Length: 157
Image 1: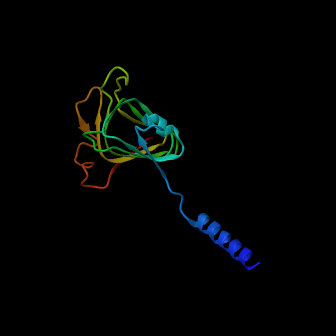
Image 2: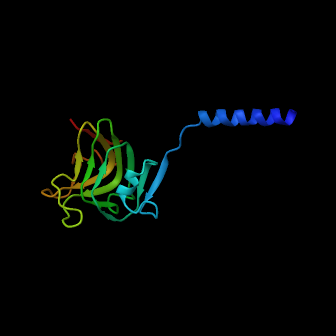
Image 3: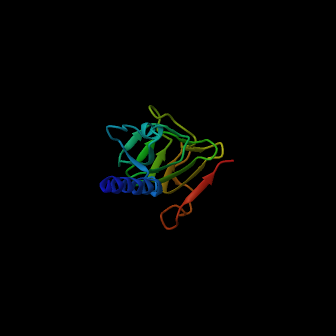
């Protein structure tokens, strides 16, 4: 009887700890066998943090949920296409990558490499944006996002 009570007590303690512990965010790596593209990781609801390898990704990405997307560096992680963030309270953070909307072909050519709409919020650090009609430009081309301050942010109307 005593061992049953001890086991029940241990199970109750384990259940209480499970309910109190914070939910650990899933980090998804792209490319990987499970997530060969950025969009595949974005579409997987278990991915809350997406880590991109240091390579060029020829794809446009549409995001409609909260995410953190990090590259290896703005010099080595490049998204050739458009990155769209939309939906009311969506908050997306980008770190250490380049979004190049100038490349034609698979990725298309976009006047806005980053497009934020419908009340979504986009922030980040060390982001380079290359638009179709504009030469290389950093967001807020004023050294704000070069790593010397916390971040830049934009909220769409």
